[in-house]
Amino acid sequence: MRKQPILVTGGAGYIGSHVVRQLGEAGHQVIVLDNLSTGFRASVLYGNLMIGDTGDRAFVTQLLREHDIESVLHFAAHIVVPESVSDPLKYYGNNTCNTRELLAACADAGVKHFIFSSTAAVYGIPPDMECAEDSPLAPINPYGRSKLMSEWMLQDLAAASNLRYGVLRYFNVAGADPGGRIGQSTPKATHLIKVACEATLGKRSHIDVFGTDYPTPDGTCIRDYIHIEDLARAHLLALEHLHNGGESFTANCGYGHGYSVREVLDKVQEVSGVKLDIREAPRRAGDPPALIAKAERIRALLGWTPQYNQLDTIVGHALTWERRL
Ligand code: UDP
Image (cartoon, rainbow, N blue to C red):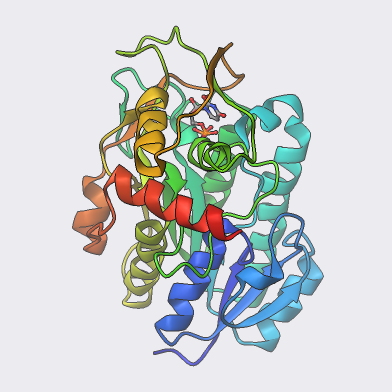
């Protein structure tokens, strides 16, 4: 186990906090950098929380130097596709420009390993619904473009320095800590499983299905939903890979099978025992019809084996957390 702490940006957010918890449980020292714009102090179960911006290059450089940090995991970002369509500069500012400043700080401080939270949105509309890591990169919304630009900056910096990186392209992350300690707490959430769980508890009057005329078997969008706990585990394996001298890599994080919006809502009703008021609504801006991971690389390269790859489990854990909130 390394003595130097690991810096986790956005570690008070949904995905970051689950990774921080697993890092802490594995005995790593952790420093969380979060501006608490969407994260929660209470979600940080391990390490020291520093309040600040990833785009504050001087502050981050000092933090990296002071703690002799060699490894950075970068989660801090905006993540809502339709919002990226209506407010693109917010996304290019926080996701792209701030990542540029963070990378500059990492270069200044001699950081060796960098793990970047990317997204399936970099693929755009895959011709056969499935995306491999070498599929064409053609994002159709500013969120995907803001993340793809960061991937490119990271690759270029690595080519010009000693930095090695792991880019993890997340498909649709859902669920909560199986131990029930943390979960997705975002107010005004927009992600399907979270929204549906809120609706089962009466926190919302109904749920909209955005688009029923997509070229999919039931006309609604298909996504590959991955349990947060399995996703978080992938980060620890990615870090271990880099710490053991492994090469830089890019890997999809998904299970390789998709569910339509209607199938997800059926499952949420089945698991919760609550009948939802489901309404058909127009398509939402920026949504590709289907995104399913080709997910062999992460298994082969990192030895990642999912433990929670059942939609029932994902929905069950999300519901348990939602009741607790
Ligand atoms: N969706 C929906 N109703 C909702 C929220 C989402 O029909 O209240 C759909 C959305 O249009 C997309 C899918 O569910 O087709 C997944 O969307 P989400 O926002 O969960 O994740 P994204 O794929 O945009 O990252």
